[in-house]
Image (cartoon, helix red, strand yellow):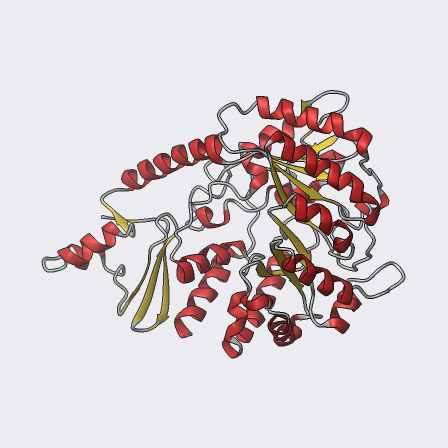
Length: 444
């Protein structure tokens, strides 16, 4: 008998053990430490228990059996990526923004302009066409999303409409938009005609707190206009995502955030996704940031204990817990994460006004981290292949980690920034975060 590397054991109390397998998404509660004595499991009379543990993926006949399963899953995952993951093109309309949020990770990029206008569109769409030709096996329609800076500036109304019209005429998908929401109202007629898959905005708490964090360069508040625009978009039938970025300065406002969502009907709306995430400096957070994020996470859990309605918010900023949460509350097993995010899939492209292409959304505006360019002609740099070939099977340190299929090796960009080596893991306290969440769910 071989106990799976991916079986995680949590001793909640002396007589309670939770087993969780990160390959099969199995989770079980036992009244004893069933894996403490392998000889006991093999003893006569325990055949039924051993068969159950085997069926759930906690144990195998041999280590080779587990390796064979991993290989089979990885092969299937690559086929799924190749055939069913769509090509996603993010058009970075500008690096400029009409806000001056004090924690923005793009502050360095704001010195850039790189604004796209209608004269750029032929080259942009020609590049997209050429990229599509390089993925003949992809069955899903291409998706075009908007990013910035702030993509929905008022002066972009005509440009956004032209992009959406072109996408619709091609039979592609008008994808998500990441916006601050301040000028969303100016674009609503376009979005009512050409439906984006969703729009994400950020509201960081009640009005006073939000306005201290997310304001214009002259420190004018933005709360009222964003809330009004969100409600107008919902009335127009547009799906909205409302994200709250948390740190020590607004974590205490979670009860008021729940009140706000209840007051506007967001908490019960099928058209609204609510999410929480910790503030991070760049990429997906370093190990040092991970420790700070754990402290924020503890306070989120403490608030949920007192305010169950907060469970309506997904914990997107803690991706390992987000998957675990879906397993517990929706019964949805997650696909093992052989890679960390879209950037490693190799089918996500961020095209900016300077002609650069980035694999990672958070690398935009940093030419040294570009994956390629589309001006004067389409060309991919070595980083593109390095990103898309990065997986837990070739990252040093992941091969013998039972959490690797939960975190996917961590953020590739963070590995480059921290260690200058893309094939090193970028760990963010995944083990401790999951352990604490398992304990929390059991106690609850």
